[in-house]
Amino acid sequence: MKYGKLYDVRPIKDLKDMLDSSVELYGEKAAFLSKPKNQTDYVPITYKQYKKDVDAFGTALISLGLKGGKIALIGENRYEWSISYLAVVNGTGIIVPLDKELPTNEIDLLIDRSKADAIIYSGNVKEKIELLNKKDSSLKYFISMDADQDNGNILSFDLLLKKGHELLKEGNREFIDASIDENAMNMLLFTSGTTDTSKAVMLSHKNIVENLMNMCSMLYIDEKDTFLSILPIHHTYECTCGFLCQLYRGCTIAYCEGLRHITKNLKESKCTIMLGVPLVFESMYRHIMGQAIKSKGEKKVKFALNLSNFLRKIKIDIRRKIFSQIHDALGGHIRMFISGAAGIDPQIAKGFRELGIKLVQGYGLTECAPIVALNRDICYKDEAAGLPLPNLEVAIDDPDEDGIGEIKCKGSSIMLGYYEDPEATAEVMKDGWFYTGDSGFIDKDGFVHITGRKKNVIITGNGKNVFPEELETLLNRSPYIKESLVFGKGQTDGETVICAKIVPDKEKIDEDINNNTAPGATVHEIIDKEIKRINKSVVSYKYVKEFSLQEEEFVKTTTKKIKRHEELADH
Image (cartoon, rainbow, N blue to C red; front, side):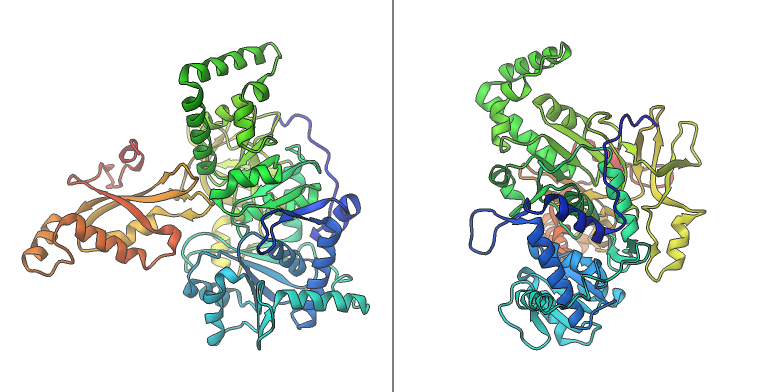
């Protein structure tokens, strides 16, 4: 493997050790930039203050009798979420992060599956969560990030935090002195998919800190960097790489107010690095290049790029100067973008680099805590997922004549297994190897390449996974739909629209129209109503929002599988 020189990282044994040592090194520096209620400016929160709040909240949780319990956590990216995460795992119990976009019934199912004892939630999901308080469940406490006062078993986060600070002043050291078993399950993470098919991944402190140390040895990140947090923090990609990594390296985390506010927040926070998914970066690149061409003209933009590329060959770099307007539009401080969750178009990575902004991509899975391979800022291939992390073995199982097979990996960052599911664990864990379900190859330079995924997953603008097969199954259940093909279409604002190509069952539609039993008067109207009906059965980010009709059936293989890439070539 051709790693090149690795960057120095300090050894840590668990996340408690990580936070303690970071506070010693960076105590008075801003760990977070947050916008409290009704404030328009970012307010800095130091590492010292963050640790005090983590210790206080953990102490308060233990005082409720939650020591050793499972605590669910649901809400948007915010300071209270970050306090809660480490307050649970650093001495209280097991954290169960949940997706705030899930409907109440799916949250309920995950609570039941995890056997959570309490839930910490934001005001944005208040209605969904407090419905659970009206039914029998394992939940003893509901802790609201936005409640001003306690109400029965609904507790105010702020009041609980205040109580924790008071207990610390009185000498309570139950949380501070709690020992950490680095090999025990402390994180229970649900993978994407329906609640019935999603896996509950068990991770330990050791899994996470090994991933942190190995990842940070490959990319240069230090205390001068500010990250803008834009992806859902419950997801392991953002949690490990956009939250814990920053605390480990002494960076500052600025919370984004939403995808439409990225540009504004980049400027306000003076962000230097941003973590994202391909559609965010692709739409961002299309937008800034479109604006540049509109302002300067296509010929001038191409000339500037050609001139800059030529000068770089003779060691003269004028990118930040010649493209200063583009850099200013992105806040003026961005030095690197990190893309994950899906493969990015190599031309986008190359395009940003030509403008003077490094873009590297990585590859990972929840089961791997999560990073498996990563391109480096000094050693990269835009078409590759990256080099395997140090101390992680990555190999190809049963490669074909082209060297392509299933990617498998082995190392200390691999999960403990799936919670209460030994059969599913045995399917993917064999002789110490974790089988990823992704196909690919490793080239002569050691770079991992992904050639396909078992699931043709759509990654939305904010990092959600949408599995087209799930929606196609629902659509195909309609008597008026013969075939369907679901795909994502990126928008300029970073969002993704879920679209469907539909082959309607004309015979059935004509029959029902003639019998006055159809739910509409035209083919388009009937299909539109069917899609709206089906949308009601799924979470909002999976809604099919656009569709097209075609009479001819989709092109298929000899085994009657739709040739997805061929059908979607023009989309």
